[in-house]
Length: 281
Image 1 (cartoon, helix red, strand yellow):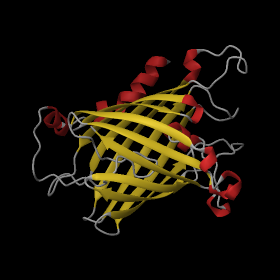
Image 2: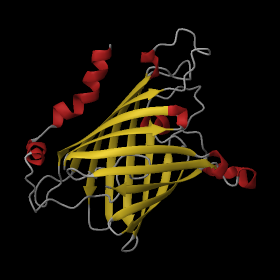
Image 3: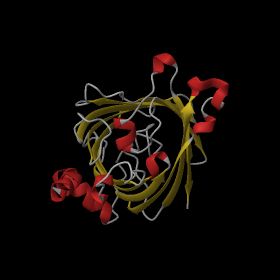
Image 4: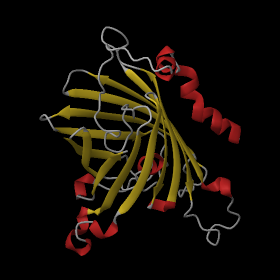
């Protein structure tokens, strides 16, 4: 079974690897490629098709506070923060790797992001990126789950990120996603789950843009208390870097978490404020 997971993990890369990727490895970049559809590495929760340049190291600190619905009791969620620390490195302009640790369920995660096809003026109409992750949930307790094995802690994600830059102000992205958790909280929830994600960016001013993303879960259990993630955010460009502020109904920041375990309800004001801060070395 583990070989099946590995096959699924790398399948998009095997199917869609093109000459564009080879040219990235060789360091050949043509000037008629379109600029990135998104300024941030994430739209809000979902990964964007933006890539880190070769030999660049990024350190991203992400916070999701508790629900603002609690008001002053938890100071609008500030007392219930979740933090994720993420290191990302550009092996080439088209191949990025990363490692992260999240306080949500004490999750450690590795990531691989590969640009397969790049949108080109007068050429291919979209950019296609493969994004894959393997995570370890270290919060599972053997005392509560007798017979717990290391494999039960593992989860996997693989996505295709397909973006289109319509003009200098407006971009959209489609994200078909497969994720698998070896352990799930809901008895009748399938371990393998499927989501179609949608996202976009609209530039408001020279420095500000508004972003959104949404994940439509295709096989959620009927008894599940979780909901589809809907997020709205604002990007502020400052000196070549992007500071992201957002509101979302999903507090987890790992892909398996925000897709499978979003709990907030926008209609009740049960949403979470958060931000991403990135440092480039």
